[in-house]
Length: 323
Image (cartoon, rainbow, N blue to C red; front, side, top):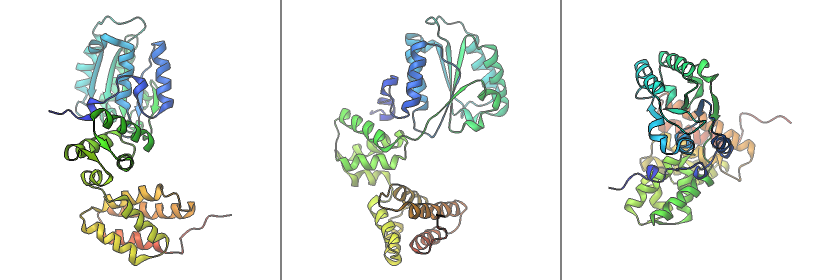
């Protein structure tokens, strides 16, 4: 049975980690000196937070990693009992380690921990600071209580850039012996929205059906509106060609795409549209954001999409920059 590419091709060393070069450079310095502090790794999903801390642990602990690392997913095991039993017993355990290194507790989805569990964790971090270090991976560091934040160095991961995603996907496809078009790589990088897992999962799904990846078959498995169609719709809006823009919208709707898929695709296309003037791009993004909020609140989806297109096609914008 074929294993998921996101696991099969997960980086093993810091040199292999893609994106967030400043953070990776800092961790390489820590790896050389060996004395790692408590860490909070915050950022969007699929940006390499857990992978990066695994690479650091592998560099610091080597063969001792299996005994000296405890990994828990706090979204599943987030109560105070887990902190008092599993984490405390691990912190108390004696393990032979390389000189100058510590045991490591990796808590994934740490922002899902309950407040009482976080308070108990804070106390354990104090008591066992000489033998154990903690790495907390989360999407939002603001959900980690202040006493823990003050005991940690916070590393903020950002979304991966399309070139970074495209480069890694290209290497994986070559390793797997899958042929591809450059346009397919561009689409995979675009639909990932900075999440490497999304790009690799889409590439693997397409490769199961097709021996050669093209833009078309990647879009088929990804189930998102074709970027060219969305681009055409935006360009019609830019020229105030409302009927033509609505015709494209209706066609996308008939294909079965949901309102959120269409709104997100419009956002990506507008953000990356190189020919749009900045004031027009900001105006379009404002309209798209307002439409997204109304759709989330449960208002009639197609009516909101049509209203978005109409608002974008109006020449008289609500705001004009000063100066």
